[in-house]
Image (cartoon, one colour):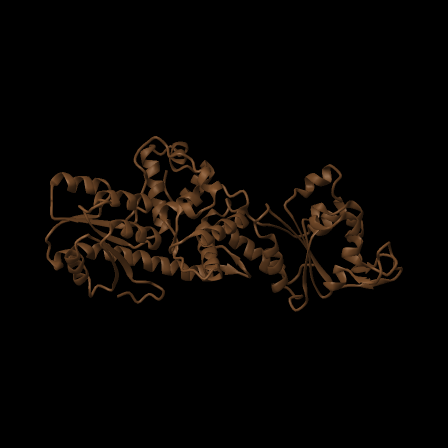
Length: 461
């Protein structure tokens, strides 16, 4: 019995149309700290496997309807990390060889004594316990791999965390850049929480969502009668964010006329409501965020150079998901836990092939896209494991066909995805004689991603 907290017992599915055989196997497994689930109907047994993802399957070879060999093929296709042991009273060398060739972990001839079954299961149980303990450890580490609401344990994210810690106590203005969906608002919130204005308000404004004619009123406020429809005085966001932080998201969409007034406010730390002659002092830290290339916008006259220099004394660049692909597994587990709790479901994770499909995707929408994908999957999943069919159509429809080559690179005996990844890289490089382009094609990833993972695992090419 494991002492690692959070590790669930090994789950074993027993599928045999003969009740006496089921009782014998259940009796043999009684004191092994495992959960057994028995089925006399192989179709029901297969449905349980697909929905609940047991670690081990004990199946009779000859059954009405779905045979043990057919069930083996379906299980191996579903997830090759599930160990399938076939049992039969009609032993033949040919069927044993075929079973092992198709991926069976073992093949037992009936009748067999209980101690033989336990002996054959012992190494499989040890391996699965090690895998579950590694998963529990990873989940524990995942809870620690967060920084002010951000999730990530890759070098690019640790660099970003370090910058935020150094900047937060001192900044007046910061420019946060990065592709859409990378979490720029989370960076802004981290700066606010760790800075001297943490006790004050955090006020976000999406500049792309503001009507151009209302920009000045939104930022600086107005007095009654300042324009048609101004029936009362209005406090602007600068005053609302006084002694706190104002986030100007997508600042590249701010009109040039408003940019000029924003520059003066940043320089003087005072605002003037629209229609008023009175100025008001404000103490506001400003964070501007954008996915646009502001330098290119300056070159074509779409953004003020003086405002850019005022904002960008400190510039933080948020990495894309491809630049921090080592965090994919961590982020996936984080979002699965979040949405499983939100939807009140028990979801242990993703099947092996679903994980591979996520790794093959280029993630143009970055972390936001990943969150949407996992949220969708958590809604759709019927069992405890997310499979390929639970993922959105666009992911499955754009899945590339496997290369015409060698047998799939699968390492079912490994205990963690990192170890699997290392083995897959090694096998691909070996099969291609160290040719990185060929290995990248075989693994269906880019050469840049391959180089990053080779470096990550300290592989010698």
